[in-house]
Length: 213
Image (tube, rainbow, N blue to C red; front, side, top):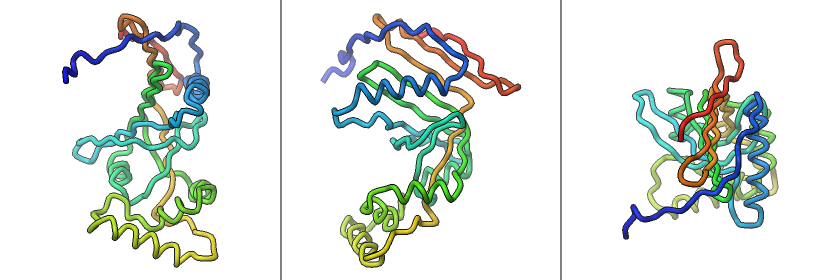
């Protein structure tokens, strides 16, 4: 296969209306992504989460956005996982959203912090029961002898919590990534893409600039 020959033309529209609040712009783009991907079995809230350990070695994985507001972006995970360990050592992290139906990308850079326990427990209670049991059963990122061991742990969790609510595990909860920079990328014909970057200045105000593609 000639990988170098894989290409397509991007056909995004004008991207000139820029406000002073990047989170408001993200909200508009996110709603448009949800509409574009609805009914297609896609996850508009999927995002690549990049972290780095204390020595600066990076790792990236896909997680799901579960909330956002003016403070930033929220996702949930096992606090004993690799990503959580790296965030403990180095709270700086990045997010990337890719919405190919719209030829759009949003990149986020900022610092992550654990959400409060009440918020984590409230979200955990809203999850399907099988997902709750999986969170209780899985020692995320730890070695497994085989898949049978994971299924056995899941069955043990079902028996342990039979007939009662599954409590939010102490090792499970949310992170809030507070953005320091956001870049909005709109694919355009002939690779003349639009790139707008918002960055917080020392006074806490957002500054926006256009970047060459």
